Length: 65
Length: 497
Image (tube, rainbow over all chains, first blue to last red; front, side, top):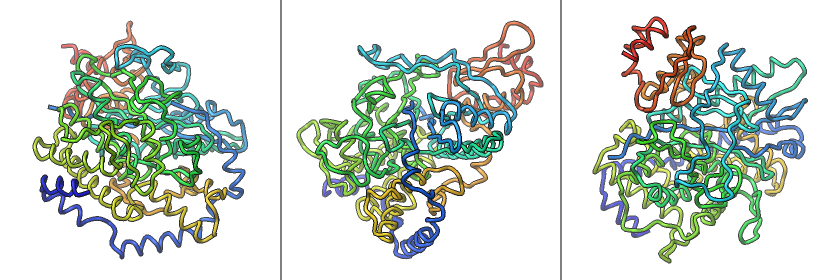
């Protein structure tokens, strides 16, 4: 990791500083995400296919490309 | 100087039929026909003149290798946005038109999703017997069958192929930490026999070779198909088969954007002090997909070890310096190039400090977060069928069933731009000429392919217009010409004068 820190400093650009500060890990965003996830979990059983086991078993594809 | 990285994405979609004949070839045909006939009311066929998927970039074919067959009898259409929409093997496939930059490529990939959604609706109302067609944007059925999402990049023919192989392999192996779409479980035995609960990518475990021509058997990390769809003396098209289908736009942008940049550096022969050559890239590919802690040291050819994150930081640092020294013209659009670099750094930093903070940016994180929350709420183990069902439904394109659509992932492209890309071609490549001719003269363009259009002027013989340079035929080049030409005959007269 020390090596990487060195490298980043040696390239020493403003872009680097700016974007490190913009990492989307702020707690406010985290809280919002969690609330949305809770809402999604509340409704997910209605969206999920009725018989999960059968649904998964029936999804068979041919290899492609 | 590196040439502009014109790019495109081909996606083979998973297809499932409820209440009817499960034949995927028939189902794919119904789907594409429904779109071509009911929605765009146009069907321009594909011209196979230039298909040669058996040509090997190494200049020879290895004994026992199996070039893919060209299936000329299956449904094939060209759309007014310059894309190809067709049946490939047993899947509906959408190939974006040639795009001048990575963000444009994401826009057309998103337009492809919308085209498939419209196709599903059209097919469901076209068949009276209660059959229901369901399309998934994923790469595996969870039972060992994989289908691909391929990327294409324009390369300078002068760059030795060996240098491309050496330079891009470390990126293909380690970019998975942000390109992966995530998957519950595994479909092949692991090296150490352990059980897998969740892995970062859909595709990694299907790769068995370093370099090769195949795409369906013994899949190679570097595919050697040498089919440039352009002037073969000047250009190469690097056909990339290692990627996952992404729904998250940031993941998709980084997949195409970082790869474009690394390829440009390879063309300009830029390398760092450290040799990033992996001792066993195939094994490393599997290891990276299985390591959610990013702590696993991959064996390097020089006897040292490096984690996927360390290799990515090294590549990022080189790219940052490359951009500062030489600019980002190679990215088609310098602003997009800067955006790719900014997000590349942000995502590596996020993966290093708190991977779950990237749930709005990366597919595998978004999916894992949802699965973990569900597991916590219901107290279920990783072998619970509901988790496998959620994995599948993450990729379901039906708006009412898609789990991805319910997650608030970060958007880079507004919906209106996606909608316009359903019918309008990109302005900055030859796709503009293809799409505009199809729009203007649907009856006279009888077939089309990547590097030519064939016109029927009502007089023998048919007239082929070659388009051997992906960077010519842009709106700037041909709009005046198209405006002046009231008929295809006039266009052809002007072109040949």
